[in-house]
Length: 142
Image (cartoon, rainbow, N blue to C red; front, side, top):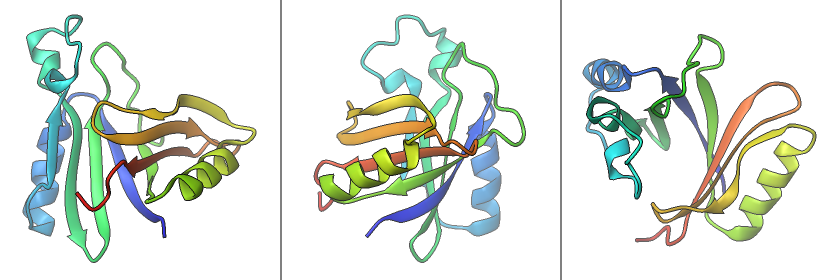
């Protein structure tokens, strides 16, 4: 069954924000990846490479607060457009159904594809202007 988590986008202060959230909610980050971990970082300055590519903070039950900085060189984390609804799925059929259904009539930001971090992932804005992302780990039990 799919789970839905808030995904917050920042313009360079994701780490600061998530350290604040951690001080309020408690717990530990279960993932923290920087843009420097991407396969090709040749276009990033040393400072931009240290931006957060993905961070997760479990905040109770099955809810996980997730976030990232905008990719280096891309601005636009404006209030109101700085959040995505992140769907976590476990199998191809569910992933395909939700991705194709929710993106119908909308605008694909990143087509559903296999990623370097070991998941099928896609991003889009639906026909109502809501930002979505979907992530299906290749091996969810690993």
